[in-house]
Image (cartoon, rainbow, N blue to C red; front, side):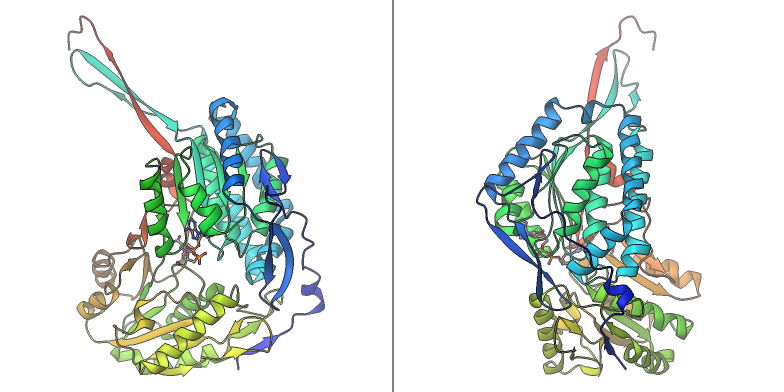
Length: 500
Ligand code: NAD
């Protein structure tokens, strides 16, 4: 049975003391100019964790000024790459020394599983810094022969001041996958974390200072989207906005960039990712993959496998096993190591997911399991699986961003490909089969930025990640992400008396 646990004594000891609640600008923690604050909420209970200084347009202006000064006059963009690398490597070590606290801040602020944060996401953040530290002293252009009369070379230069705007589902991960490549490139930045989860970004700003990142290079301004976020994306002195969040907000950000200084934009947006399971799959492994694909981080994952297509030969057995496992899934306090799923991030998200579940029922899908809330406080929802879906149903088209799977039977490979592509999104897809031809054909036929064959959620620092279609453009991870924060300058010079 899905159950609510209350955590054990050991796990509750991990609840962190909140040390940083102010804006981080030019190397100092400061109040917002207005003096306004907002609450950040513990989704396990709905209680207030802390009040956070609320950044607004004027605070963004000051932060951008600090970043601009650090870019135009400060040491960071001018340091040898090896020196930037040294500081990033030191920061990675400091993260590991503070891993419990960083993990606990995300667990309490976002309802994420503490042990996953501690053992997977925070160590991965340190490794992201290491990956880009390794690249920082290998940024170089090319020498070009050009013509008989001229030759040319290219310089890769840091883009300038970057505005990072991040969502609430992976606060630590998002912070580091944005900050690390832009720092390695030599940029300076203002980061606005999601208003639901500002705590770990502020703590990371403190760690950056300990590592030796110069003042003004990283500024962190918590606040709301339509105020602080909009000020950053429409700022005349910001050279690029790197955004992760919903497709709806991505559209607004592109408009703001177009209407202001035509700053560069990269968008990592929503998804409705398909997982296609063929008849030759190992059913036990496939059910586990399908459940993890939708329930990891309570379904609050842009690449969640929210649409699962299963071939008819194994469908019935697959469905039976899937439902059994979903019913045994443990929902509860994310600090409890036995728990597999914590609360949704906040009341708004909780209600949104429940309303999609009601839609699914009304539209005539079959509710195989779940659909209800768990416990009498906080924002817990049962793992929920619908079958007999039609592809035009809201639950098959909209990104629910919760623990809700839409399951569908298919006959042929062509039918599966058509269904998988029947979405405005194109972030990721999974394929489960032992047949190499099937895996290769389907991989090429699906319009999505990442394809996982016989695995899911397999990320790597060196593996570019980003969307097709309305899931956005511009990659995070890999050297592609580093190049997002660089620009190419061509230098041309004449050659006299060249015999060539
Ligand atoms: P959101 O778009 O509501 O908010 C994301 C960020 O944008 C927040 O910091 C928010 O304050 C800010 N924002 C909101 N309105 C703004 C505006 N008008 N101008 C500037 N900034 C504004 O998204 P969310 O609800 O925080 O996150 C969930 C969404 O993020 C989902 O759609 C999910 O798929 C997506 N996501 C995508 C990826 C990816 O890599 N593709 C990763 C994680 C989450």
